[in-house]
Image (tube, rainbow, N blue to C red; front, side, top):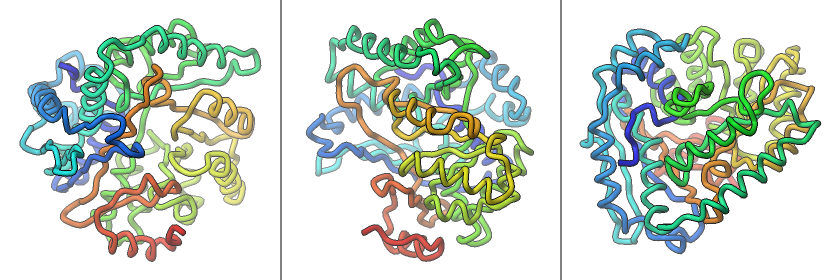
Length: 398
């Protein structure tokens, strides 16, 4: 079995799930799978592996949280005891997931049901699809190549004037395999070090954080702000509603805002002085990261907030050279954090799968994100997308 623990997922799934339990327990949602690789069938027909994927998901749905896992979660200052009690009786239900091969040869994965009972599917299902694909297509993986590439990344970081640059692992969903993910992290712990003087800040993976004594990292994802399009008082206020609901739950903890659900301009219009002061910073996940960083710093200055007291997190398709370039441009001007995903956990010389599972409906109505990278948009209702652009004053792509 690929997934053997429900903790083998990203921290932000739990932080969002707690908000769902407390504020939106009746929400119904729908998620869809998408492979973004150009000419996806050219790198391997995922539909060949439908049966294997189903069997792995069946195993996932037999898992329950163990006492030690619940105790680990409960020790986090922002996780509430009633949420841990709920997790103590929680199981994923296979009836909410459909996996099939379409006549086109594409893989279709649909997740539909109560948000509270489906939110934990995304990360492990993506990890399952990745590992099933690579264990079939690379039966004898070139681990030597992977280790050499990892060593190169470490060498790029271990330059004297980069001693304060810290990276984090954000690579669970697109990892080559569970075993490789753990090897990468163990190597980084040994070679980069952790703590104040180390260069490994932590990991988004809760199980590996617990296992290796790392800091688990994460706040919120796009699905949370997308769902607020259906759960808030009116569409135009949905982003503000999402941030306010988050602040209501965490009272100043987990204060990193995600900026690209409606694009940067719409984000800055809503991210006023109140939110500039209330949130600790923002995370970049689409569009040009250098322009984004400059706009964020200018926005803080405009709102009379010292940028040096705020954190900018970069997490969009980072490589080590790009991370270093960003660090050199923004160091000393603000607090910095870098989350590296696919390039860290799936770089063995094979083309990685660019796969996602995104929320497309909430309470029966379409939801979407309109990011600064148009290829990342995902919605099955063009009329709704047009309406969303109109409401948030987002120009149509040329």
